[in-house]
Image (tube, helix red, strand yellow):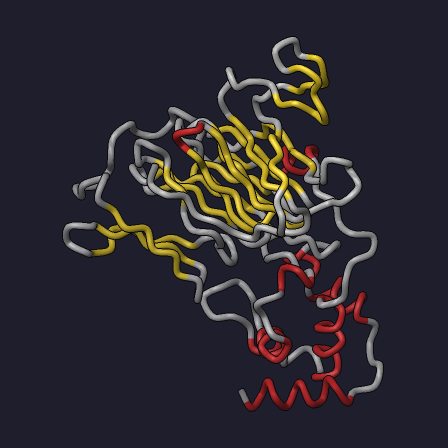
Length: 324
């Protein structure tokens, strides 16, 4: 803490030093990406660093982060250089970064193809009685035997998992969402990560459909709701805007409504609730005013994987379902 305080004091008083862009390119870009959108390391954008206060960020650059690939730079960079870097990574990127369909598809990594791993648990514990423990301090996940409360496996995760693990109905697979948009599919029977994809730049959480066929990802950046298939292939990107298409919104939460065969999403910046059905037989959604539903006198879009909007009196940030 004394080191962080001293570096922060120097940062506030320091005159302009080395070019922070050159410092970033030399020391940071190889891991965090030339555009600060992340790579081996997490994205370095203000929205992704909300939980990391600047003194802690300064100390991280100076001393590194335990149990990660983040080294310390106190022996290479002066306090002023570190201060310049911190100012850079907390500065807003203009124009705002985009992450579209092409980026999502290009990011997908398949570690083990479907059907290539044994179709049975590779351990003696009850596969339906496991605890999955997310360790945020050093970015690992532990799998515990629920009967013995003993660890049977531990593996490194993506940086800053967020929103809680989500399981498939059969209990074999679990999906993780990281703060910087990575969705990882883990095979609990074989204790291996089988696929990963980056669905956004700043992600809030993910949900798995009740039939196990789809994964929905709620993004703060870009403003999108991304639908993936069970193997993390891209199915659809829904740009999140109000019904007039004028106001764009962050998606603050998405959950599965199993009895309705749909995902329900809360919007941070628009007074609407979105329901996206994953039922191929879902009724069409009306667009605007409809004179007569029976005779379809109005505009409609397919109900399958399109948003059905419910206007609200206020913004809905998060929510929970009753058991039914």
